[in-house]
Length: 505
Ligand SMILES: *Cc1c(COP(=O)(O)O)cnc(C)c1O
Image (cartoon, rainbow, N blue to C red; front, side, top):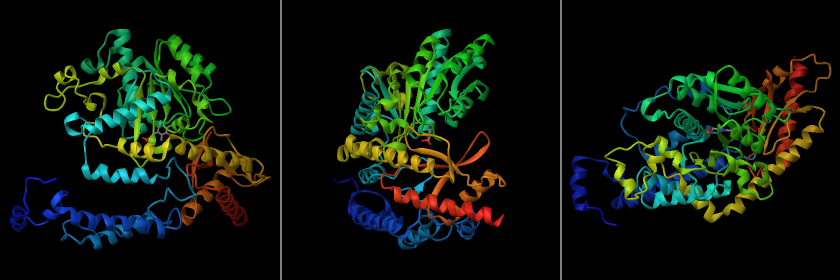
């Protein structure tokens, strides 16, 4: 490819404006190759030098190093900056790929997706309109079509890539609100704002649902007061009998049930709400059903466990987080709807971007379905991944993870030093160290101590959470490379810190 500037022109411009060789274009290929090589070396150093999931650095220690940094200093060389970034960032970056990182919902990423990232940020397409992306738009559509068909949706379904599960959930609640107002009150929210009775709108979630649903309700002007939390059963799944009780109670008090959110894979426990029963309830009371499968979407990849999310196809909208369970780099997420016409509720037209007549000419403008405008071509990562590893290959990763979690649950149950709270449908286990038969020690304190000791030491990272006011430790196993040997080592370290606490105090 030859751009309109010639080398002569560049050297001419270079005299006036230095640094033109920093611009990504065909005449700077040499610079590009050189720097990418350095970037790659810095990533490889991260892999080779960070032998623990975390360095254990404290915010104070690290903050001190930021004090003398001034962006108005003279520019530095690449080597200087890579070195600076090593000391300030990569050296202390939490290594999600480490087999002993089993804290939050962060998966290790697959190499084909990382390769795609290079194309994504270099070519830098924006997927808002056809005239800025062309093939990218069609690739994204093809992947959405594939995900919809894996969910069990029909031909009329559609969706969009988003920045994450939180944005997908926000879109679900947005469509639920606007669809309800349009259908039941002929009220166009996009145009007229909230209807008068909006303060009576109610959204039902389980008490274990993700906090982004509540946040969405606030953003959407319904307030947290619109969220009705339904108690879960002993396995932390939404109790459908209590759901119906709650719906009836709200109706009796003059409120309007508009939506129910089922979680397919709760963040803390990896359990799946009874989707089919909740779908029946949604139908009975004419509510929108949103399924938050940010975590559980990984089950779409495996024939062995796919049945656990049966019923997901009854949802009006679904959240999938490829960056949680499809081994994709952040960001990569999807929002799917059963009926593509739902998107018309939120379509806005801009003459400079996606004029209305484009629709008549069938020009595919993805911005019609998105709350973002300029948007990354994240879909390309999934494209590379499915082409190179395949659904089955990814499914094997998921099966390994679930297997490791099952075995870990057995170990925890059979160890008198531990108290396991749940059996996960996926790979999250909540438990605590509890080797104190006389209960002379506060288990909250011991487990908080264990968690912070682990974090400071950095050789294994686990998460913590509160259940019924009690502090627990949490494993989220998302790495197919994590072995039972790793798990046993981590459990031994936990025990050791637990003993330490009880001996010293
Ligand atoms: C992580 C998570 C989300 C939020 O997704 P982000 O990608 O972090 O925005 C939503 N729902 C559930 C169940 C999650 O686990």
